[in-house]
Image (cartoon, rainbow, N blue to C red; front, side):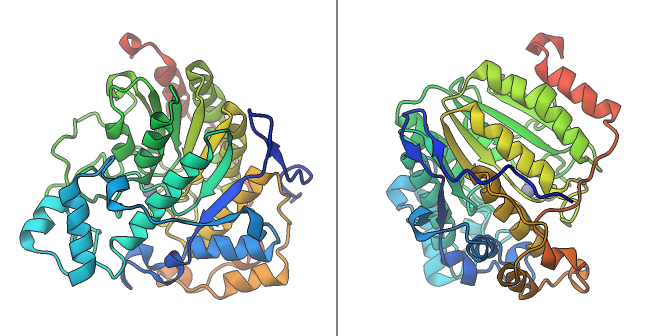
Length: 404
Ligand SMILES: [Zn+2]
């Protein structure tokens, strides 16, 4: 395989004309914090991305920002004060009352009480708010801890206690921007962000996700959402014009992602003419991820990142899902390379390989990891046929609302 990306061009230029190197927002809180030994988020993710980028010489001190933690007052821009107080109380006492469990969906349904139940998500939010603030005059910011797209104003959902993308978008709007594009390529529907901006014509949310997967398919007795409509996340669901949804079939491959990018996502983005793009780059649509049946290589997600760069003078890139520690770490380090036009080496240098060899994973797929999970960043491409149902999505998502 050849190396990926063009020759290194370390600087991007913002609309303001100033040299503006992409900035990386991280925190050590993610290294030591875990949702619990048996939770899918027991794995290190952001710390692996940081360690890989440092081992590759891609993360000099001057571009790294230690994430601030959002204050309760900042969180109240989107979340209810009662809910924020409940998270603080759960962190302090390490328990939740039955009433709080029912009202706020914490301590159950994949949203466990853990030692940093307030601090960790509040740090991800602080990073995304900071990122949005730094974009005032243009530029690119990467906060891989962000992307918690299921969080609701008054409760947790799908491992997301808070909703940092919504807070970032609100920050951009409060700064006076009139059009923000939110693009979400996580395997799950970006339902919390879509709901936050439904009927708000200043924000266009585009979500590419696996059809029929949670949160759209709600088995009886699950963490349900009383406000959900039956068509949520389907191609007909446009949230009053503010959303477009691309629910893709199992086995979704790199060629199909490239097709939807060229034939649906980029045309939608061009006609919206955003002043800022917020890209949620969940890595759970990768073939190596156990939480979806999508079949992408990380090259497909890096291509989305590269395509997002010229869409607006401001770009905030977030993480999201990703439940295979090797796949998510390699993918998100490559996202940083794509933002900087760094060449991804075919074979990792020893220091980067050591980062990957030190990881472990309590999953059957983690018992004997393939060698390339240790020695490479780029997956082999996963091309395939462009299926009729994928072509239909592009047609339907671009059609006028009454043409669906
Ligand atoms: Zn996901």
